[in-house]
Image (tube, rainbow, N blue to C red):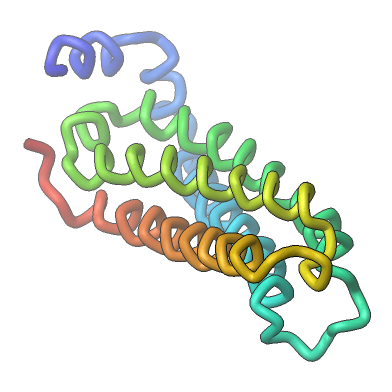
Length: 164
């Protein structure tokens, strides 16, 4: 790991990112806004799946279609802003246990969010599916949101955890 960190920190890309005044705070801001985009879009879907919103005029399938694209756009923005942050400061991120936890949580959260997407596409209206399928979709919805909250928390802890 240390060899990768050393090599990456010495690349011209790393130097270029660090050399542009204000770029790192801008990338961090985009990164935070992107996680907010993912989480708020997922929350809107979750509230509809869990039937906790008063906006029952929109079907679950319509709500999922409406907010799903924002989730995936947010994920692209997360990757597009996160990669340069890693390249700019690999010694701060790569050996950091909070960063490593965040990466694992991202994989789990993305997989769970995708599984929810599949469940919602297969069962467009829960009124016509079994209670078991409805419970599974609700569990996926809650699990995905909790995992994204954990991703955000792990991301914040990177600043306060010393690389190992």
